[in-house]
Length: 437
Image 1 (cartoon, rainbow, N blue to C red):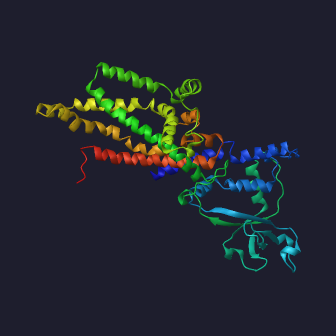
Image 2 (cartoon, rainbow, N blue to C red; image 1 turned 90 degrees about the vertical axis):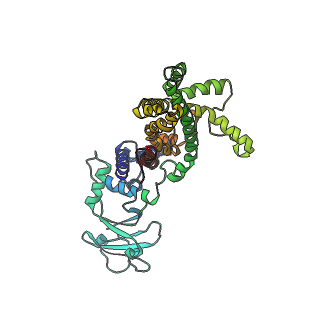
Image 3 (cartoon, rainbow, N blue to C red; image 1 turned 180 degrees about the horizontal axis):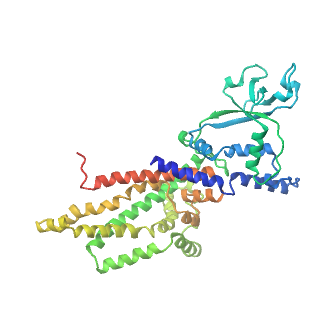
C-alpha cells in the first residue's frame, strides 16, 4: 500500500511540476496584466511579467521550484525540511553604518535584515566560505538562534537564472551573497497539505468543507444501490428467463446507458426551469438556517432528489448482474444439488448455502465503499452546482491549484488502497472456506 501511494503521488507531483500553466506562470500573467491595466511600463523581459528578479526568486521559493523535483517532493511529503523566512544579503555593498566600525573589506562583508525577525545581521566571508554571521546589536552568532546559512557564488546565481530562463543566452553578472533561513518539517506526514495558491485557504479546510456533501450523496447512493441490486439479483436468478428477468434487465441497462450529467441537464430543463418542480442549483436554499427542522428536511430532500437520481441511474446494472450470475453458478453447483437431494428445502439451499458463496465476488468491491466520503461525480456536481469533492478536484485541475490537487489526490488514493485491504478482510469473513482457528 505504501509504495503504491508514494508512486502515485510522486508521478502526479512530477507531472504538475513540469506541465505549463503552473501557479508561478499564473502569477506572472496576473502581474503582467496588472502592469498593463495600470499603465505601467512593460518590462524588457516579458517572461518576468514585470516582476523584479527578487520577486521571481520569492515565487520560486514559495512553490519549491528552486529545488530539484525529488527534493521538492520530499519537502511536500514532510520527509525533508523546508526553508522558511529566507533572507539574503549581497557581498560588496559598502555601508559603514550597518557593517560596523573598523576596517572592513566590503567585498567580504554583507548586512541584511532577517525576515520575520527584524534584527540586523552582519556577515563576513573568506573565499567561498562564511566565517562569521552575527546580530549587530548583541554580537550573538545567528546559527545559535536556529538560523542556517548558505553561500551562493556568482556561478550558483547564474545557474538559477538559466533554469528560470532556459532560452536566454545572456547571463547577467551577480555579486556573491549569503542566504539565511530556518528549517521546519511541514508536509503530508505532519498533516499539512499546504495552502491553495488560488484561494490561499488551507487545503485541509477546503476538503473538510466538501466531505460532508460527498459523504451524504455517497451514503445515499450506496444504500439504495445495495438495497435494490442485491434483492433484485436474487430475484432475477430465481426467475431466470422469465418476464420479470427480461423486463428488469431492460430497465437497468437503459439506466446504465444514460449518462448521469445528460439526464441531469434534461431534468433541470423540464422539471426545474419549465415546470418549476425542483430547484435549479445548490445543496440547500439560501434561507436554510432560518428554517424549522421539518422545513430543513423537506428542503434538503427537495434539493437532493434530482442529483441523487442522476447518481443512481447507472449504478444498479453491474451489482445486480454480478449477484444474479454468481448465485446462478452456485445454484448449479454439485453441493447445492446434493443438499437438495438429501432433503434440504430449496429456500434453505438458496439462502443457507448458495447465497453466501455467491457474495464472495460482491464482497471484493465492498471495501471501496470507504471512498464514498470523497467520491463524487464531477459532471453531476457541475450541472447542479453542488460544491462536492469531485467539483473541487476539477476546479483544482483547471486552475492549476497544485496543493489542492495533490491533497485531494492523496486522500482519494489512500482511501482507494485502504478499501482494497478492507475488501480482502471482508472476503475472508464471507468465504466459508476460510476459518480463523
